[in-house]
Amino acid sequence: MEPSLVVALTGSPGVGKTTIATLAANAGWTVTTVAELAEAHGMISEIDHDGAQSIDIEGLASAVELDESMLIDGHLSHLLPVDASVVIRCSPSVLTARLQSRDYPTWKIESNVEWEMVGGPWGDKPNGRTAEFDATDISPDALWMNIEAWLLTGAPNRLPQIDWLSSS
Image (cartoon, rainbow, N blue to C red; front, side, top):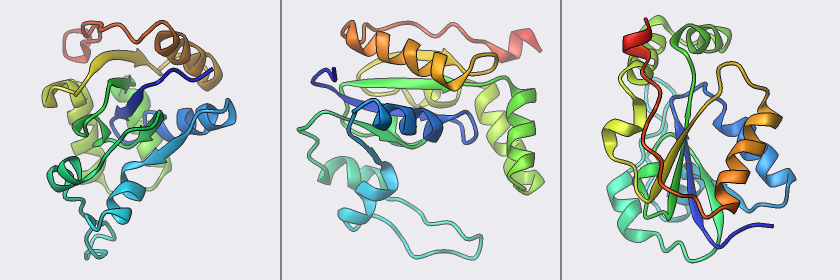
């Protein structure tokens, strides 16, 4: 049963956001992506020389009206007007391997791993009640069960616990 919440599903690229979004959709949750919302509101650029599209996240946050329950998949989703933010974390060594398997260029791997090491979305002060979940040593199904349990208990705010800098 889906609570009446708009939930950001955020974290560094490669931590498992889309896998969790797929599991959520399979469990009956309404799921969309930041890119889909940006496209629908004209807040996305043409593809640039790196093969990426820029999203005007501030413009999107102002333009979008999120009045139905849903999960929003994307590493910028925590900057939208949401009720709760799920921050998925992953150890830098595992994240590096995942991004290498995607054939990311070295500069992009280093940038994303650095963002994860310093706390990722926590540095942006995510919107809504927030909790982080470590995806390093847990199956996607078990991770989704933990996230869904948190959401079904009203998504109480939880302080960050993961500190990759002190454990490296």
